[in-house]
Image (tube, rainbow, N blue to C red; front, side, top):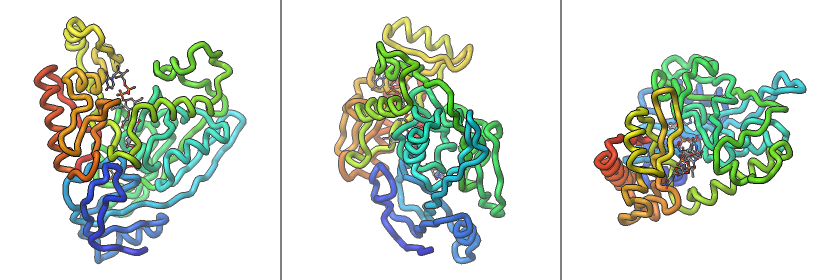
Length: 338
Ligand code: FAD
Ligand code: EPU
């Protein structure tokens, strides 16, 4: 284990923000992690666990120790003709796991293709895309508690998964390291084309003939058509969550805006598109210096060059204010602001 001092975090966050960490270390397995967490020299330091840094906005230097988990095992369990359980270490790149599943005929994860970041982060905000959330395939999550280094397993039910939400963002916030995740994949489930852009992609094709490789390819094409590649333009995907509003508020808005789409969350609540709200405020493509709203997807804030985290935060607040003034709706950050 090599602990570096005063290093730039620019290569470790997809917004490309140049802040410094007091200490930075990469750990390769659970015993190294525990050794580090128990090291008297660093025990009083603030800790930040990072994976791919694709859901973080740094607004200042990190005055503590940044820990990047690089554990990388994938282990299969209890395989039958119908299903398989796979334990995947937190440091495995998420999309390489998705590809591994698709290549091996394991179904249920293909709609989540090409989401950046590592496996350790996926339960935290219950990543989702194209009609699937990762909770649909998570069996349990293994963690180490920062308080006493105890190992615990949270079953799917205990994770309290919701839309971009889980116990890890609430009761357990800042108290744990996710070390691995146990997934349950099917060998026979049918594909999920509920999300309309995906359905449209396959328009006219016999659904029973569509393979999971084709679904993965479709998701990759749709995503790359509208989301900026962080290797080219700094961003962290959707900056805000899609808001969930009451049916009454939705009906009032839908009377005014005929193109408003809603997705029922419960009998009384409806999810609407934050990108639509931002676009309606005339902000799609808006740019101030090196910060902007992406031209093809208004929910994504981009760093065109070398802007600071604070400028991005300020810009995001301007967006929130405009949406609030026009629609009386609060946009809540999806990105973790540090
Ligand atoms: P990081 O950004 O490194 O960390 C995120 C948070 O989790 C931080 O608070 C960090 O401290 C904590 N954390 C990370 N790993 C651990 C761990 N092992 N233990 C404890 N805490 C940990 N998200 C979606 O849900 N759907 C999408 O479709 C989607 N599309 C995206 C597209 C683009 C272009 C980008 C840039 C992002 C997108 N995202 C999407 C957001 C992001 O990719 C996901 O949230 C991803 O799971 C973050 O993984 P990460 O490893 O980069 O996490
Ligand atoms: N829309 C607009 N203008 C925009 C963007 C979207 O009007 O600029 C409207 C359109 O009606 C469009 C609808 O919103 O049909 C949905 O757009 P899209 O399919 O791009 O999805 P989204 O709701 O904007 C969510 C997730 C994405 C995920 C996609 C696909 C959130 C916060 N975002 O975006 O996740 O990839 O669905 O399932 O839920 C992320 O979390 O970082 C992320 C990228």
